[in-house]
Length: 171
Image (cartoon, rainbow, N blue to C red; front, top):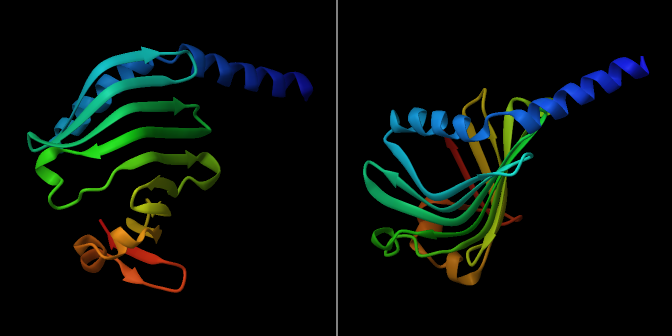
């Protein structure tokens, strides 16, 4: 039994280490283009256990939307994580949504295969949430700063609750 467990763990580690992460990223780019989303990156680095994207810019319908200084993708098969740092809105969108995200994390585990977990913090406050992939729903709980609470975005998209501001949606 011990040998079988060691063999399985060794196989999973080898798959993660030798996975063609850069090629998978380019495949993801092609899939996103079909949804009118384009990611432009200054540099891509495969560091064996993760893939680091530097100075990424996301375009939607050829309109610059967001920029991130660094995106770290950890495709570990049983637990996958995408972490982004220093996210800002494009200049054209700052009049609508002028908030900066210091850190954002999206994680997925095969133990909870039905959902993605979301965490983020920035000058808007901090949030945690879940995307239910089967029900196709989003639930986010935000602990807002005073500035965000007074913003038009908070009034238009979030509901007040005892815990903070809640955003719920279906897709």
